[in-house]
Length: 235
Image (cartoon, rainbow, N blue to C red):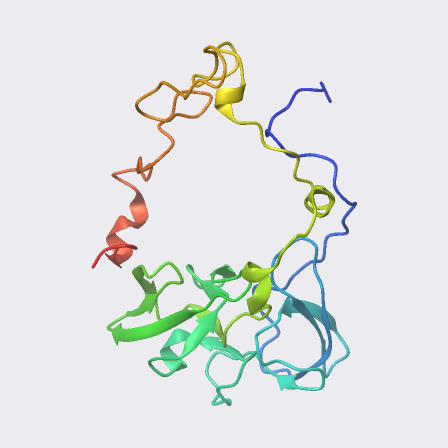
């Protein structure tokens, strides 16, 4: 509205239509057929258009081995086949199974492992909690009533794609990134100097002075720390 940049190096890009994704899978014990696997400009993963036996349609995240014509179902307590696309509580899924779209709070909808090629693994179950190995290698406790979907998210080759030209990145709404050392001192802590001067700062920082490399920014007293069994990157 005011012509002010609120996020640097973003803007332009192709117009997008937002697809509403069913992360909750609330239509319980109603079989659905996969009608199509589609591209979604709003996420890295592919999405699957499904139609339930009562005629309702919705989009879900497309697992790796899901194909057009497959039948999938979401349940709470029924015995169903453990195949990609089926959604059920963690307490009913065998140990070692790869899962995605995992809830952190029962009924809230999937929040974990939703991007292309990702999956989490059920390591153990103890009391009211399942121990889940996250895509980041972090091991975390999640209540066994929380639901998740079987399988790994598709479009695994997403991370190996080559854009080929600068314009293709612009289509995605990303503008060129300017280095701090190429700026003036008024614009960035690394700016200024004569000729091709280095940053000069012993600790690389952001334009606002936040240490840029290696500083851990997670809050020490964050409420969810008690659910983390092993941190990412720890041996």
